[in-house]
Image (cartoon, rainbow, N blue to C red; front, side, top):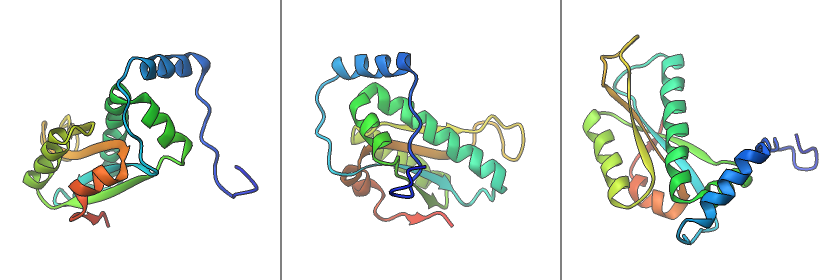
Length: 152
C-alpha cells in the first residue's frame, strides 16, 4: 500500500519476466499509446452464472486477453500495469452480442480473447461466456463498447 496515495502498489515482476517483456517490446512495431489504457471484459448476463462461476469466467477472459496483448505490445501492457491496471466489466445479453463484440475487436486489430467454458459445471461445453479486450488504448476500446452497459 502506498500510504501517500492510499493505492495498492502493483506487484513487481520477477527479473526474468521483466527481461522477457523488454525483449518483446524491442521486437514489436511502435504503437501509439494514448493517455489512458484499459482492459474491458464483456460477459454474458443471460447465462445466469453464480458469482463464483462468473468471477472465474471474467478472470479467464482478463488473463487470456492480457497474454494476447503482450504479444502485440508489451510496452502498452507495462504502461497499463504501471497506471493501475484499469479493467471494466460490461455485459451483453446473448451469445450473438458476445460474438459480435469479439469479432469487432479482432477486426479493429485490438487484442482480444473469446472464452468458451469447459462444460464441467453450469453450462454446456463450448458455451461462449466472456470476451477479454486489451489492455489497449481506451479510445479504441470505447469505439467498440460505447453502447454496452456495466455488468450489474
